[in-house]
Figure 1 (cartoon, rainbow, N blue to C red):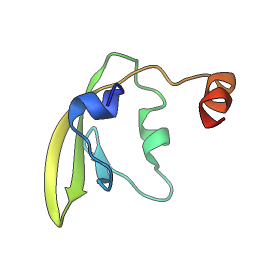
Figure 2 (spheres, one colour; figure 1 turned 45 degrees about the vertical axis):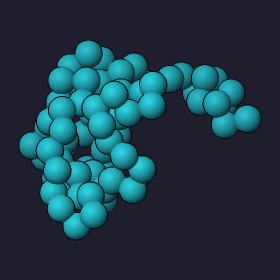
Figure 3 (cartoon, one colour; figure 1 turned 30 degrees about the vertical axis):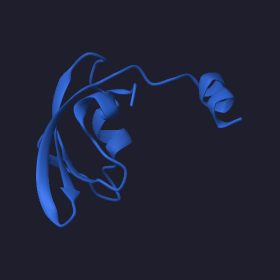
Figure 4 (cartoon, rainbow, N blue to C red; figure 1 turned 60 degrees about the horizontal axis):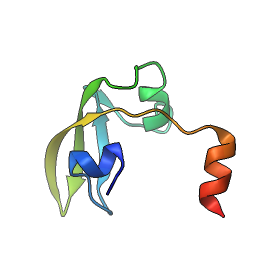
Length: 74
């Protein structure tokens, strides 16, 4: 809940289909689409939720370092 996704109202099971107006694809993953955006940027995201398309605005956070991610996985 205390993440940019949680604060934006994204839910478990949501399928992200667009980020900042661009389609999420195998070649343009969510990570790829947000890689050059700044933390704090407010980005429109379109998700598929229970068969319906839902638009939410996400304020991007800072990606944790590899060390931080490893600690979270433990």
